Image (cartoon, rainbow, N blue to C red; front, top):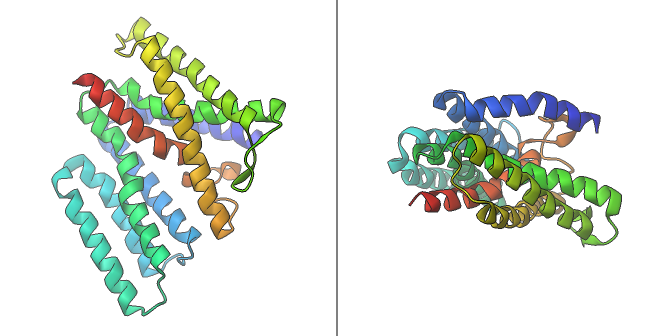
Length: 266
């Protein structure tokens, strides 16, 4: 609990500043850094040694994937193709030392992780009010926090014991309901002071959807950890673990919110 409070006290103000007020180049750099660290954590999870050519190449490629979404999105697909070709050339040269699962983890780390983080840049470029860029965090962290406390106090029935033994059905329901409450509060603030464009009814539906997606994201990355026998992806956020421990739900929720908001602007 002390670790949670410490990370929240330091991390939340920094997060809010970057999302709401920092220049876009600063946001882009922060997102690129998170993507690079996350890709490195995933590669380490599947057995790629720190400092190896494959690790270094993957981290660099993940960082540039976010950066190119910002200033040259037309060539991002070419960049991904280059990554895949170079990675498999390296795997061929190493003649069996590089496993297929490591190559696929690299593709995941270079394509999907940066794609999700760069959604914030795409939303801003689409003209979405920057306050809405907080929604992926609100509808991920709220679900996680409410699920934690609901499971701690009311949890009786296991949700997915073979994947995450401590998670309960009661906690899951509490997380979804907490998401709805926080989503409605966000909609009220936006409607009251910033001319928000999402009504209360749609926000309830979005919060419910994101509550489910957030837990799928959480459990998905837990499934990967359990398969490879690790407790946390990293130690960047102290007892919270690494980027993939802290932002696992965000990586799943952000593209959902991007799709909804972009559709709403049409």
